[in-house]
Amino acid sequence: MNIINPYLRIGASDKISVIRVDDFSSIMMQSESEYIVNMCRCCGEANAPHVCSKCKEARYCTKECQTMDWELYKHKLICKKQ
Image 1 (cartoon, rainbow, N blue to C red):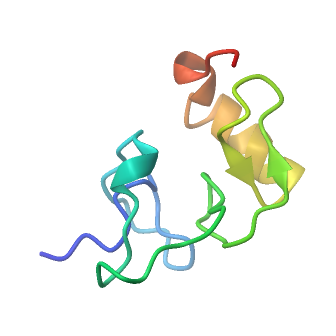
Image 2: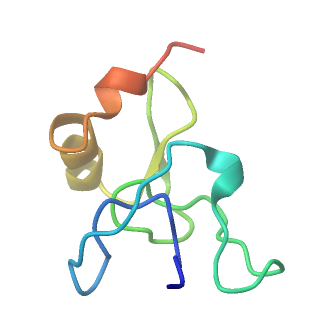
Image 3: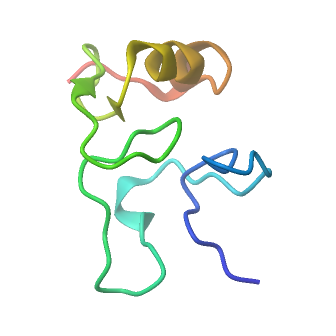
């Protein structure tokens, strides 16, 4: 089994459940040289412009993704003020 992105709880396009690891250093795509820059914690989009105002680490492509991660995926449980 290949884990494409262990950081997501659901796949961005197919909505299939996957493993989520809350460690930014573990984010890797299909090859070691292919990293996503500023990935949205919720859907996996690259270059996410919004950042969590509390921890300053979690990034989101939209306010909707930020709300979903906070409420549904429980970012609030691991979020710590920087």
